[in-house]
Image (cartoon, rainbow, N blue to C red):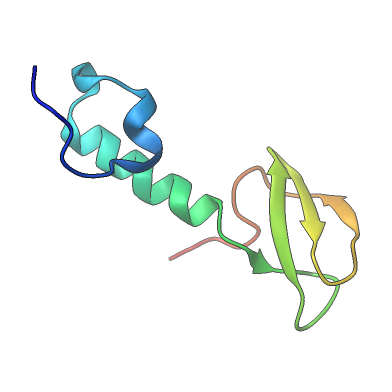
Length: 75
């Protein structure tokens, strides 16, 4: 069995049966989903995703509901 030579990120929980492209795509999606995003409550505030659709403004401390994965669409 081959040893792991580099960190594979969040997709390490899946085995080799899913394929490399699927796991790398998952890593990019989950990395952007876990970043702090602009808060709708404060111009300089940042919001962090607590769970699917539940967000918390780090500046004001408000917990609010919103879109499941991203507050604003990343294009």
